[in-house]
Image (cartoon, rainbow, N blue to C red; front, side, top):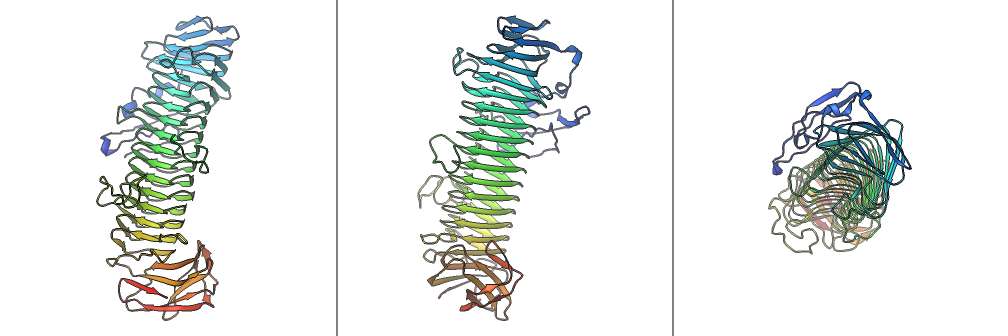
Length: 579
């Protein structure tokens, strides 16, 4: 995917090779707004025009509203009772309060209809208060410093085939400005475009009986402060007929989402370039999942997160893609009633600060691979810390069930990063291969049940990095003999209490590692570049260290006072011993 640098008006439009989409964005500067724009937008080139963001104030038609209806004079305005219809492209400014009425846009003009909300309260008891039924494109401007409220009743007389949102558009719709808008949707959706929807700026609050903000073809958020409370999905794009549409793109902004359904749901792709995003879906991670999807971020095709600060508390998966997930950077605070990060196929994480404080499985790929290139991970899981299901059980399957659609080369690949895992199943689990070439992994796996810190059904190869696994001896597994780095697996006949130090040093007293466990254990596996062929090492239990401890691993200190449990000599890639 290619993208240019973007500030406020930058749109991210995504293309993936499997969908044969293309993107060519050209940034332009808007001098009076000191923002960037994009002139060539691929599948939205008919939606966006840089000239939409400036207008002639002398050409504005002003509309006043009160209890009796509308007061306005000008070409392109038709008034019938408490209904006003705009039939001509132009700029219209609305102010005042309308207790039961409707604003309609219905024009064959090719130009833009610009609606300025300049301190309004618009309510309709029986239909969509703002209904854009026919136009090429419409922009709703939130005038600087104004507060605007649009609301509807609990039922519509137009039925299921008519407008189904408080602000409804059959065509392209854009929001812009530095004012605020509150949408109270008592009937169904808050804001809906049956075409494309762009939010360039503004403070927007949506309280919706069903979906909060929906752009059928695409939903693009360039900036703004957006708060959604939804009985369905909070942000949604659901075009299921065109592989180049049905996506959600977030360039920047502060976004707070509370939903009974999914927080962010795209039929195709979700791309997050940056943003301060908070999501609670399905009541949060303490709620049991139901038949209703209640994921934090969900995509039918790809999820790409470039940066940002994302907090998710989800009853279902926090981040879920039906194909692939790519995380390039960012801060993540995740609590999930199911998986923290789940891809049906491949997950690639190259950097970031990822805290999964609650999950069933921390990271899972159902039919593909998980590849970790870098980043910092703190993972708490009631089952596996990281799981590659392919080759064994696909998502929702039972142990031993083989996946006919799994790729033959699926694997857990770790080449860098810092991972701390606290789980009750297997720590690093691959039903196929495991390939570790770098990074630091500290795994505190199950304390008593039939699981282990490393569980690999294929070839487990460690060629670099530091791996510390603490768990249960019954199912303990060492790395494979094809590894380039030396490893040791020590099983204890008696259980070692939590908090007791483990210290390994060479024959000359040089420390290889000192660590402690947050759980009791009787199995210890370690792979380290400090192990050399032909050298003898001593393992101590207990004692103390003057070093600095982080995540149970000590550094820059002196160890003393422990009990020598065993010594071992490295003579092969794997040294196994029971004491």
